[in-house]
Image (cartoon, rainbow, N blue to C red; front, side, top):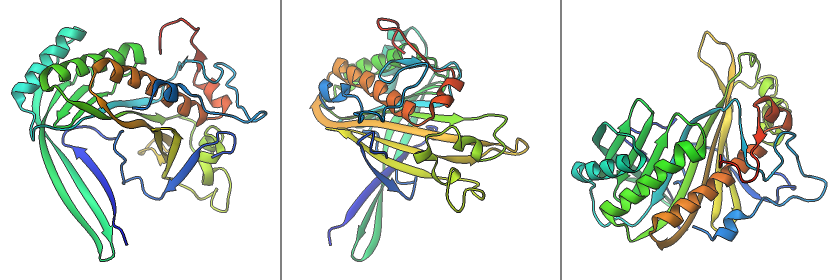
Length: 330
């Protein structure tokens, strides 16, 4: 019996918080604790839209499928971009972190007052005939942060992550920061290649009227809402946790982690968590511009996944509206 391996990790100090019509392959996982690493297909592969059979297409009244859109009431709590590359050192020093920080600040015109040493912990779990064994590793890097704006840039051997907690729109909040971070990374560490690019959006829907789980059953796509919509336990569900793996074609994949959560007392309400990872995995020479182009296309793919997780009426409730072609990129 061949062993099966999963790996999952955590950066110290970094916050973590199917339908026939879609023709996509989904695998439900029982646990949300086995974290897939945020993971370059061709532009053609990335630009492909979800294929729908005639008559099954769901149209959002305010923003037709395939169009760029914005939300008047955004539920986004965290956005994370990650790029992985072969590591040629076992440590990123504070001195290197300062150089990267200064380069980013010069490019975006915003200072990052804090550069701290950080550790990344990874655990490799191996399942074999004799049971499970695990091995842990730790690598040294830096965390460049702007607490006032909620921006954190983590640099470790083989990995760059850009995290924002206050998000306006892609073209204003995240894209310039990713562009600057990639340029600074290239100048400071000269990565030889890129192996994975990923984009993660963590959304949490809240409503002061959501005193019953069925409130979200009427807003989330029924195939995702599952037991809070129908079944023998619908009236008894108090919390759910789901994970869906999507194969979107070529090297493009996505992970959706979602579920119902009770809000802390005294609210007495329920919120709904929607965590979307979209990633690609392929080895290419490192070049900041193509990586940024890939990130932008991942952003569009993540937006399409987001759109398909909700009922059209809920999209309208959130104020979803299309952006005219040729307008500013969301």
